[in-house]
Amino acid sequence: MKEYLKHNYHCSICGKAGVKLWRPYLHTEPLICANCAEERQALRKYNVCNWEHSKCAIVGILTGKEAFLDKWIINDKGQIPSPFGPEPEGVPNLMTYKLLVDLRDYYKEKSPIVITLIPAIPDDNGEFFGYTSLPQQASLWWENLPTH
Ligand SMILES: [Zn+2]
Image (cartoon, rainbow, N blue to C red; front, side, top):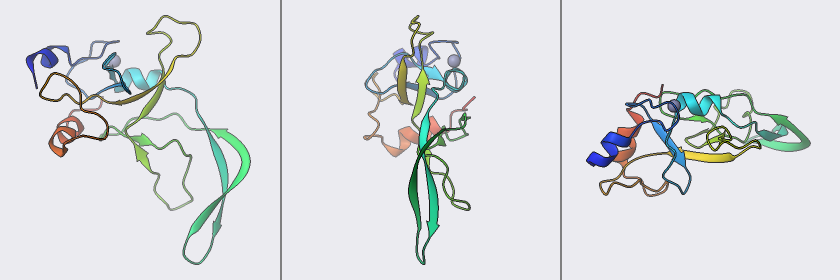
Protein backbone atom coordinates (compact mmCIF):
# COMPACT_ATOMS: atom_id res chain seq x y z
CA MET A 1 0.00 0.00 0.00
CA LYS A 2 1.26 3.48 -0.83
CA GLU A 3 2.46 5.64 2.06
CA TYR A 4 -0.32 8.13 1.52
CA LEU A 5 -2.95 5.50 2.14
CA LYS A 6 -1.08 3.89 5.03
CA HIS A 7 -1.41 7.16 6.89
CA ASN A 8 -4.96 7.80 5.80
CA TYR A 9 -6.56 4.36 6.05
CA HIS A 10 -8.65 5.17 9.10
CA CYS A 11 -12.31 5.84 9.75
CA SER A 12 -13.36 9.38 8.82
CA ILE A 13 -15.86 9.44 11.69
CA CYS A 14 -14.19 7.77 14.72
CA GLY A 15 -10.58 7.62 13.50
CA LYS A 16 -10.22 3.86 14.00
CA ALA A 17 -7.35 2.28 12.02
CA GLY A 18 -6.21 -1.30 11.35
CA VAL A 19 -9.73 -2.48 10.48
CA LYS A 20 -11.79 -2.98 7.33
CA LEU A 21 -13.09 0.27 5.89
CA TRP A 22 -15.85 1.02 3.38
CA ARG A 23 -16.26 3.98 1.03
CA PRO A 24 -19.25 5.41 -0.83
CA TYR A 25 -19.81 3.73 -4.19
CA LEU A 26 -18.10 5.98 -6.82
CA HIS A 27 -16.39 8.14 -4.18
CA THR A 28 -13.15 7.86 -2.21
CA GLU A 29 -14.34 9.47 0.99
CA PRO A 30 -15.43 9.35 3.69
CA LEU A 31 -13.92 6.04 4.81
CA ILE A 32 -16.22 4.31 7.30
CA CYS A 33 -15.49 1.50 9.76
CA ALA A 34 -17.87 -1.34 10.64
CA ASN A 35 -18.89 0.12 14.00
CA CYS A 36 -19.78 3.51 12.51
CA ALA A 37 -21.65 1.84 9.62
CA GLU A 38 -23.65 -0.38 11.98
CA GLU A 39 -24.67 2.64 14.03
CA ARG A 40 -25.85 4.43 10.88
CA GLN A 41 -27.56 1.66 8.94
CA ALA A 42 -30.48 2.79 6.84
CA LEU A 43 -33.87 1.23 7.46
CA ARG A 44 -34.71 -0.90 4.50
CA LYS A 45 -37.76 -2.82 3.33
CA TYR A 46 -38.02 -6.02 1.34
CA ASN A 47 -40.88 -7.67 -0.53
CA VAL A 48 -42.34 -10.51 1.51
CA CYS A 49 -42.64 -13.83 -0.32
CA ASN A 50 -44.57 -17.01 0.24
CA TRP A 51 -42.35 -19.96 -0.57
CA GLU A 52 -43.79 -22.70 -2.75
CA HIS A 53 -41.96 -25.99 -2.87
CA SER A 54 -42.08 -27.82 -6.18
CA LYS A 55 -40.13 -30.98 -7.10
CA CYS A 56 -36.86 -29.31 -7.97
CA ALA A 57 -37.09 -25.75 -6.73
CA ILE A 58 -38.41 -23.40 -4.12
CA VAL A 59 -40.19 -20.48 -5.71
CA GLY A 60 -40.90 -17.20 -3.99
CA ILE A 61 -44.36 -15.81 -4.69
CA LEU A 62 -44.66 -12.11 -3.93
CA THR A 63 -47.37 -11.34 -1.39
CA GLY A 64 -47.51 -7.62 -2.17
CA LYS A 65 -46.49 -6.92 1.41
CA GLU A 66 -43.34 -5.23 2.57
CA ALA A 67 -41.46 -5.66 5.83
CA PHE A 68 -38.40 -4.06 7.37
CA LEU A 69 -35.13 -5.97 7.22
CA ASP A 70 -33.48 -6.85 10.51
CA LYS A 71 -30.61 -4.67 11.64
CA TRP A 72 -27.35 -6.17 10.48
CA ILE A 73 -24.02 -6.87 12.11
CA ILE A 74 -21.04 -7.15 9.77
CA ASN A 75 -19.39 -10.59 9.91
CA ASP A 76 -15.67 -11.48 9.97
CA LYS A 77 -15.52 -11.42 6.17
CA GLY A 78 -17.03 -7.95 6.02
CA GLN A 79 -20.42 -9.15 4.80
CA ILE A 80 -24.05 -8.67 5.77
CA PRO A 81 -27.19 -10.55 4.63
CA SER A 82 -28.36 -9.46 1.19
CA PRO A 83 -31.19 -6.89 1.06
CA PHE A 84 -33.63 -9.25 -0.62
CA GLY A 85 -35.02 -10.51 2.66
CA PRO A 86 -34.87 -13.87 4.35
CA GLU A 87 -34.42 -17.03 2.27
CA PRO A 88 -36.80 -19.97 2.73
CA GLU A 89 -36.16 -22.13 5.78
CA GLY A 90 -32.99 -24.20 5.45
CA VAL A 91 -31.51 -22.05 2.69
CA PRO A 92 -28.55 -19.90 3.76
CA ASN A 93 -28.97 -16.17 3.26
CA LEU A 94 -27.15 -14.62 0.33
CA MET A 95 -24.47 -12.27 1.62
CA THR A 96 -23.18 -8.93 0.34
CA TYR A 97 -20.25 -6.57 0.97
CA LYS A 98 -22.45 -3.55 0.22
CA LEU A 99 -23.78 -1.58 3.19
CA LEU A 100 -26.65 0.90 3.06
CA VAL A 101 -26.13 3.68 5.60
CA ASP A 102 -27.59 7.06 6.47
CA LEU A 103 -24.76 9.59 6.82
CA ARG A 104 -26.86 12.63 7.66
CA ASP A 105 -24.84 13.28 10.82
CA TYR A 106 -21.54 13.12 8.92
CA TYR A 107 -22.82 15.59 6.32
CA LYS A 108 -24.56 17.68 9.03
CA GLU A 109 -27.95 17.38 7.31
CA LYS A 110 -31.37 17.01 8.91
CA SER A 111 -32.89 14.69 6.32
CA PRO A 112 -31.55 11.23 5.45
CA ILE A 113 -28.44 10.97 3.25
CA VAL A 114 -28.65 7.31 2.27
CA ILE A 115 -25.50 5.98 0.65
CA THR A 116 -24.27 2.58 -0.54
CA LEU A 117 -20.86 1.75 0.88
CA ILE A 118 -18.49 -0.72 -0.76
CA PRO A 119 -15.19 -2.11 0.54
CA ALA A 120 -12.39 0.51 0.38
CA ILE A 121 -9.54 -1.55 -1.04
CA PRO A 122 -6.44 0.49 -1.94
CA ASP A 123 -4.56 -0.17 -5.18
CA ASP A 124 -0.87 0.54 -5.87
CA ASN A 125 -1.58 3.98 -7.33
CA GLY A 126 -2.95 5.47 -4.15
CA GLU A 127 -6.53 5.02 -5.31
CA PHE A 128 -9.14 2.38 -4.70
CA PHE A 129 -10.04 -0.66 -6.74
CA GLY A 130 -13.43 -0.60 -8.41
CA TYR A 131 -15.95 -3.03 -7.01
CA THR A 132 -15.85 -5.26 -10.09
CA SER A 133 -12.11 -5.12 -10.86
CA LEU A 134 -10.69 -6.49 -7.64
CA PRO A 135 -7.58 -8.67 -7.78
CA GLN A 136 -7.93 -11.63 -5.42
CA GLN A 137 -4.83 -10.67 -3.46
CA ALA A 138 -6.25 -7.24 -2.69
CA SER A 139 -9.61 -8.56 -1.60
CA LEU A 140 -7.87 -11.13 0.64
CA TRP A 141 -5.82 -8.34 2.24
CA TRP A 142 -9.03 -6.52 3.04
CA GLU A 143 -10.90 -9.61 4.19
CA ASN A 144 -8.08 -10.45 6.62
CA LEU A 145 -8.29 -7.08 8.35
CA PRO A 146 -10.33 -7.24 11.57
CA THR A 147 -13.94 -6.19 11.00
CA HIS A 148 -14.48 -4.48 14.36
ZN1 LIG B 1 -15.59 4.52 12.70
